[in-house]
Every structure is written in C-alpha cells, then in structure tokens.
Amino acid sequence: MPMRRIAFCAAAMIVAATNFADARPDSRKMTCAQTQALIQSRHAVVLTTGANTYERYVRQFGNECDAPYVPMVDYVTASDGRCMVYRCEEPAPMIPD
Image 1 (spheres, rainbow, N blue to C red):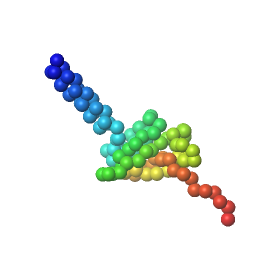
Image 2: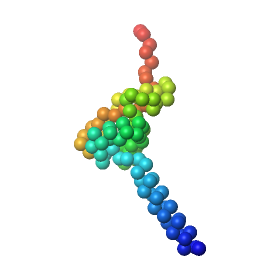
Image 3: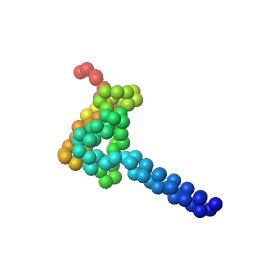
C-alpha cells in the first residue's frame, strides 16, 4: 500500500511540474508570429518578458480588459526582434484645452 502512495505522489508531482512550466511562456524564446498566434488563440496570456519580468497581453479586439481599461499597443522582445502586442491600460483622459 505505501508503494502505491509513493507512486501516486511522484506522478502527481511530475504532472504538476510539467503543467506549471507551461504556465508562463517566454516571449524571448518565440518568434513574433508565434507570440501573436498564442495571444490570439488564448485571448489573454501572461508572458515572461525578461529575467524577472512578466506581463499579461491580450487580443486587440475582445473583452479581455475590465473597464475602464482598453487594449493598448506594447512591444515585447521576441527571438526575431521586437514584436507588437496589446496589454490592458487605462486610457488617458480626453480633456479639452
């Protein structure tokens, strides 16, 4: 009986480790097209963008941002250069002069 528990725990740890590793893709290891396709397919993705940095990126058209936030252009580093993506930001107020 204890051998089954050990095997079950080991299997659970392996599954958790492989799923956790896939939880935050690294934009620096993907091409721009792959990064954009990933965001489009999942609607919103948290990407690793540097050694200790990450950010949530969304599709341009969709409802992934909570009001009053809207998708705004941002750039991430991809394996083939800079890549245009969108992230949720609060728009600047439109106050007339």
